[in-house]
Image (tube, rainbow, N blue to C red):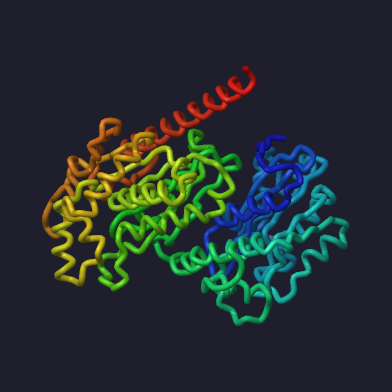
Length: 499
Ligand SMILES: [Zn+2]
């Protein structure tokens, strides 16, 4: 049976559950559902057979109406591989198939659709054990007897609820607004409420606190959520790509030609590209709405610090030793440079994992248009501090550029610059001119783009010439890192066996 090899140790159920949590995080949040993740494993061979998350696959399948739950998506993906119906996958599942699911399989659905318990029982004894992260909270269904029904049918159920960190991770991944803000009438809701207001609890819950607030705030917004967001998680991650937007942009908006999810290329196009099969992908969002003119004036240093904070505490980075590639648009490029320099001082191990940086229309040396922008802003409202930072050769830009040079020797650096003017307030202008959009370092790769300051990171489709340039550059970076690392491992083995 086709399956993915895994680096998870055989029988490390908590590690498999954390992997299921990563799947849950891919599910789009909604007030009417929980975000659940599931992983189907051949326990004899320790191989992942399939993964799934809530609403991963389109709803209303022929003869099987309704939305797709995480467990169901696992089954459908196997069925599709064999060209059979998902009711019939028992005949292709290995002898010792086990299921990990972040939440107790459903035994009742408000929509009246087929439940996951029925789907599991429908496979006879094909699934030997179900590992459950948490029992279903009573948000939608008062009493879920899913576990009991599975056990009554002779299926072994193991609830992995003895680890507070894992529990906090799962509660955070559920991302259900009504669940979080429900009155505190059960253990789960009380815990989730404490997580979402970012107080008390264990260190694990503490570091997740910010992320949960952020998801609640930003989920309905086309701009995209704030904080670090996991967009794609392969079974064998070797690379982490982090996309950081610029002024007036957003974690999703900046990387999407339209509001349609199909244009969100870091999430929709890269994961389907074989060259990126080992790339885990994230976006990072921060409050960059300069039209608000509010008092919580963020600056490049603060945003860089917050990015580093999230990278340092995210379980995705802590549990692996992947190579990091940071990609910034406009001011996002200054944020990633700043975060990297802070990491050199505060988290050297993480800094050493950063291998390449991509700058798209980044004003390394300021921009005259920032002055224009500041003028426009001053008419409308007070200018946040970071807009002032963008004035050509401002002290902040200068110091970032000078300091970055000391640390950048081992990095692969790519600067993409705009060659088309953008109309702003009746004027057509290059927002960041080529001189400003390049670091001026010898080892830097310079790429002119037939694009303006906005369209440099938004594309019509994967055949768009500008997309191809960026995609090919990223693919070459990943390939180069993989080759270098493989050679280093080979050399270490050789050196280790010699005398
Ligand atoms: Zn279900």
